[in-house]
Image (cartoon, rainbow, N blue to C red; front, top):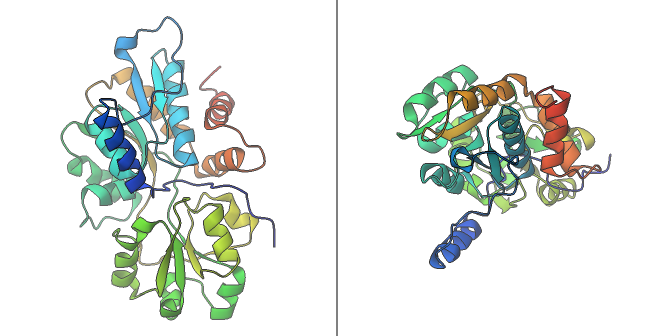
Length: 318
């Protein structure tokens, strides 16, 4: 078996909600903003009044994409800064609504489920169409990218062979004997325990919560058989590196998850939309895997440096 990638790698590590809210409340009590100070400097000489603040969730992939958005906006002659590591969707969605940030990278399917817990759309096209009618007034999404990062039910090759597992339908036969590693929110989210029960009649033995977004703690628990199945996202390099098996999802428990910008209409200009849509037209799933590896693998690049290299490689920044 290959060595695991040593750090968290992937998107939507949306745990830490309570901690994030605690920080927000503490800062609010002191009269300050609940979100961090922008970390990415704007180009000198640019007008501050029209600047855009790009937020990110609390996991590396989101942070890299946010820095890509910042770089693309600045390259287009606009002014953009970043507020990284805001927290879970529950936190950053409200930050877009209240104007603390102007936009944030998100994932189409989970965003739809967040604004409409009863949404039945699962395909990329249907999910995207449904979003426009479900978002609150003042919020919208831009074009969806080719890049997709989905939750996946992942087992070791040994477990797959032992129980003849190829799909979540197969897993349902042994769910009662399996403990799962996933963020704590997986127990209540529509695509988590409720969805597995509804779509596959899969009721797991229990949940071992890890808030590392399918990263190293989750991976080690799976490799050491402390859990038998894990929620690890499909752009995680450790899946390939450790010969893990992604179980097929024939009933689409996990919706399409295309990367796209969620934004507030208040400050978004046509020029900014064009710059961001250009990113979406260029970004691919393979790009996400490579960016995750650059940030969380041996290279240990910062999200900003990884984003800058991607922008230059794609010709967005000269």
